[in-house]
Image (tube, rainbow, N blue to C red; front, side, top):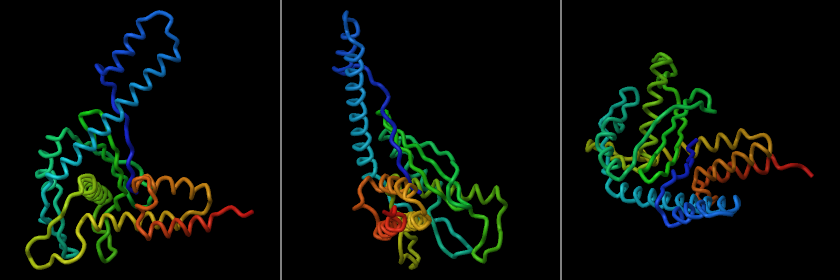
Length: 249
């Protein structure tokens, strides 16, 4: 599942509120409760400023992103895809210029035969968003026969997940080679469809109301916190899960 986790900004000294806090700490008879409140106000202001700077920088960054051509070729499926090295070569100078850096890692996936890919998108203002994606481990060919070692298959899944996370984070457009075979969905649309299908699988597997409540919170966070953002198939699947797991009177 795609998830987004936000990290609060690091403390930045020098604001008016920070100066007021420093001055208050030097005065006698300052209660701990008052100092704590001043510190919390300062931290909230810093977090809001950092989040705003992140959003503004991301907007400017995405406006400069180029379309990525598909130069990779999958001989088994006779399809093309955007190479990770092409994506990095074209967009890294852009997002670093806008103060962003990316850090990738792996995590355990709740889906069978998947590996969790994690990307921390950090901004120089101190704000971080963490994105996750469950990538299928690729060690079986289109005929169902094993064609890779476990190590090779996991490595392929990690590269796949990294590529798709970058496409989602920066809302990249994937262009088709001019070979007359460009009809159909682009990479971003494919990601959205596959992600929605994974959430449908999650909803279909819910058996208790407690599990439904927890997963509902997760899917809402993944789609920006609003039920109106849910794809119809996801919304319908979770509505069915709600009805199926509703406690009986």
